[in-house]
Amino acid sequence: MPYTAKDYSKLIGMTGFSETLLKNHFTLYQGYVTNTNKVIDALGQMLRDGKTGNPEFAELKRRLGWEFNGMRLHEYYFDNLGGKSGINKNGKLIKKLFEDFGTYETWEKDFKAVGTMRGIGWVALYQDVTNGRLINFWINEHDVGHPTGCNPILIMDVFEHAFMLDYGLKRADYIEAFFKNVDWSVVEGRLK
Image 1 (cartoon, rainbow, N blue to C red):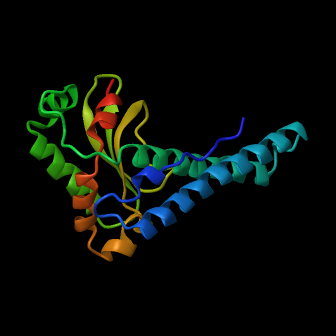
Image 2: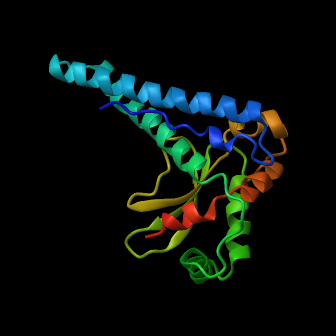
Image 3: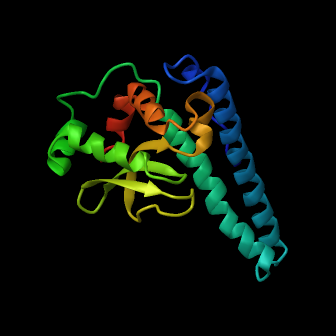
C-alpha cells in the first residue's frame, strides 16, 4: 500500500509563516512521500528479480532511510504546528518537563539552544521509552542521529527551507514563531 501525502493546508495563515514558505515546504514533503514510494517499489522489484546482491540494491536500501524519515519527520513537524494556546500548565507533559529539566523554561532554553546550533537538521524532544526520560536531540540528517528506542514528542525543522524565505539567517526569530504555533495538545498526546 503506497504512502499518501497528508493535507496540511490548514496551517496556511499561521502567524510567522508566509503562505509561500508553507506551500514550498508542503511540496518538499510531498516529494519525500513520492520518493519513499518509488524506492519501496524499486526495492520490491529487485527482490522479486533476485537482484539483492548488487550495489544498486544496497544504495536504494540506504536511500530508503533518507526518504522515509524525511517524510515522517515532516509529518511530525506539521502535525505539531497550528496551535493557538500555550502548553497545558496542569498537563502530564509540563509535569514531565519539570521532572526531567527542573522547569519548563530550562527545557525551552535547551531546545532553542539546540535549534540555533550551526548546521542543518532537526531538533527533537524524544522520550526514552525504557525510563520515560525526556531528552532534546539534534538530528543532523533525516537518517542519522535518531536515538534508538525513543519516541518523538516535538519535532522542529531547522533545515534552511523551513525558515530562510521568511527569516533569512535569523533562525532564532523562526524558532520564536515556531513556538507561538506549537499545538501542545498534539505534543502531549505523543507522550507515553
